[in-house]
Image (tube, rainbow, N blue to C red; front, top):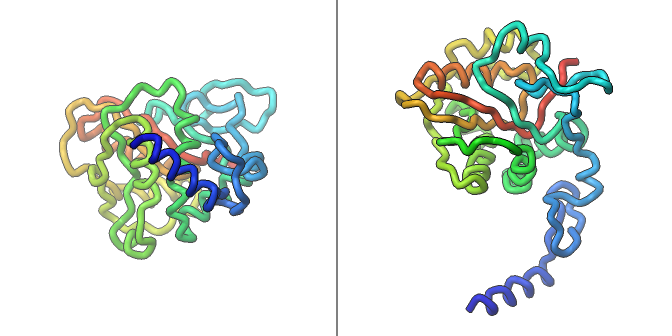
Length: 240
């Protein structure tokens, strides 16, 4: 039975070879990469010189890993941030397609990329996606952070608490707002639906820019009884 299933799988692979989800070029047989080599080359990993807490990439090429000015002045409520790479070029293109152009099928390839960024991550007790407000969810039809969280849940064999966090205010878009405006915009925007009992949580989102969203969510989770919050994102923006 197993041999027959493998033969059927191979037959369909010949008829319908896998394609790069970004450019639609046929992928080489048995490739381990979720994207073709050309699209993969456009994904810029985080440099060695990044904040050891929030993963902010430093502008200097000679920088090493250390706390950025913001994290050294005020410890964020999350423990650390794991990111695939810099939010530019290939990652920006992939995330925009995933988030705004109905590219929900990118959840698996992006989740696979996120897996590679989770080195040394202690296995969490639960995975929690950053929620969308119900109005925004109806407009977009899916929560991209939830799709990523489910992929990571499968990879890490960890339960996903899809509705633990709730977005109780339909805040304006964060895009285009300055750091202080983003923080003010998200004040009292999230709530936790139940009390926690010391769980270690992996909070999942697609992009981290100023960090206002993951800070707000992490604080709510800690205030509700979580022992620790770590953050996983696809793209990490620099401060321009």
